[in-house]
Length: 119
Image (cartoon, rainbow, N blue to C red; front, side):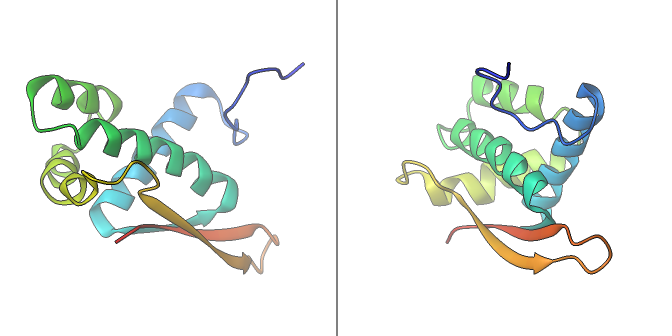
């Protein structure tokens, strides 16, 4: 039974899945948008929104420590998250990202979506 298992496995083992999500969130923070399969984008969206919720509370030691635990590499991405992205969403209660469906991929007909920040 799959009761209370809220995450998609993405056909990957745990460490590989965690690394994939971290790298895709770093790409989203760095470039402002991410294009991937819809299942990947929805999992990245969950992870990115948790990071923004941590970062928008302020640039104090505990918030930095919690964000660093989730993204242990690429300090430039954390700096951009805390200085540029999170201050835009201080008054917003949630929903920091948007998923736009982009149709099917030609090679394997996988559903493609784009994840971007809400202005």
